[in-house]
Length: 105
Image: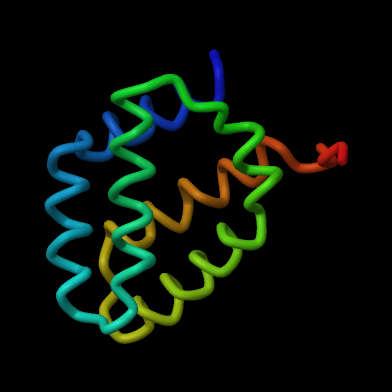
């Protein structure tokens, strides 16, 4: 299985993309930093609509993923939302999947 297939499988097992998107939209309303949720909504929905080279994105945009995880963990400090924990775990899974892979310039 590709990383894209593994990630969509994890989303489907958690709640499905429609419910996850609804939850991210709900959670987005609690912050001024909407860009993180906007980017996740677009990205995760894109996994279902097109073929994405998730492995390459994970390597090329690693810092964006790390920043998103930091935002989500801080955001969830006083909330303890299962959806946020799932998103952190999903992004970490993506990063761990490509751990050790270096981008060739």
